[in-house]
Length: 250
Image (cartoon, rainbow, N blue to C red):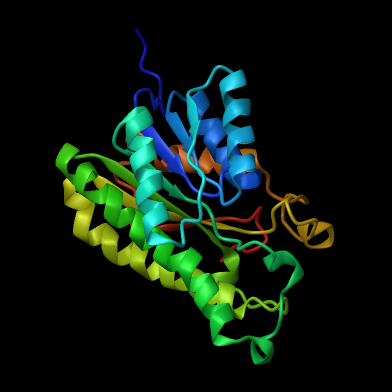
């Protein structure tokens, strides 16, 4: 029987912020490749609807909703995933936009310490906290994949009022690089996907500036994440891979 590349059969994936958009695209892609998918979202109805949609496609999915900025919720989410499918093999840290952020972008001089803490809670502490919970079993089994879905805002300045968001994203990438060296010889890889202009916020004019002339889609993100969590990507770790349609080519 011929070998199928990127086969995720039997793997358990926990994807945060997967009730819609890019996270749902990742969940669908990994599910179609055979993974059992745990769909986390801040909004329980969104997580449930997404999981039901995946199940309707014949995929294996369960909703594990909750606010992952809270340590006790992170523990509950991981426990629910383990109860449904087993230990997490693939952790995709996709959640990154707190509720209401899109309509409340402000310049640095107008931000409070609480605004920075909100971003650090979601874009750094939630990632390190979930990693802490799933990493021991990954090391014990000799296999694990951790992916952070980041944003090109960490390396390119724009006048949108993203200083707190970009700072938290950059912090998570530093964590990723250091952790990759701690666990690489244990069969665990840690990488990040850095997204450019996506089709979820309606930035159509910016999308025209990409080399391919369009915004990114959930399917684009799902395809790259699928590679990073595969067996074939075992020699890829500690990397931040830009996915921006050629808007930035350096």
